[in-house]
Image 1 (cartoon, rainbow, N blue to C red):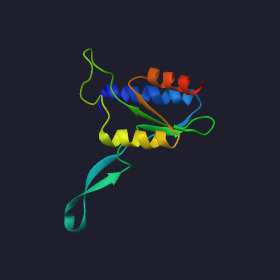
Image 2 (cartoon, helix red, strand yellow):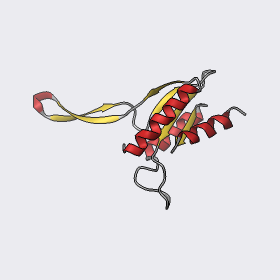
Image 3 (cartoon, rainbow, N blue to C red):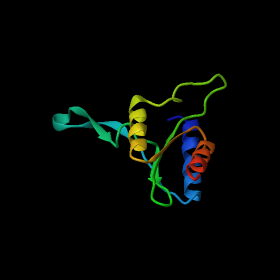
Image 4 (tube, rainbow, N blue to C red):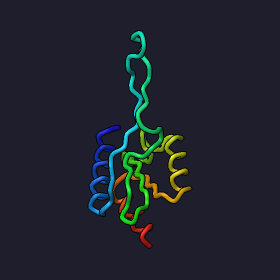
Length: 118
């Protein structure tokens, strides 16, 4: 995750806290660790495709926010689109009534929350 994306995560996280959401940072990664006999093996942490921020909004609704770096002046750039796993996670979250936000700024979160309150 690049610096710009880290800044989006931090801003969205803080904004959600200020809105009274109970949120936490979520990461899914693969690490290489020694296994039996010293053979290197992968160790998976988290759920592939899960969003960067997960939590509960006031009232009890689940929220997931996937943060991407802002688009460049000519549109997309590396890291600005969802992976197939992230899209599948979004589809499942929304299917069961959760709020999933793809955010390139805290303004995207602000806008999505405003729509959800109407």
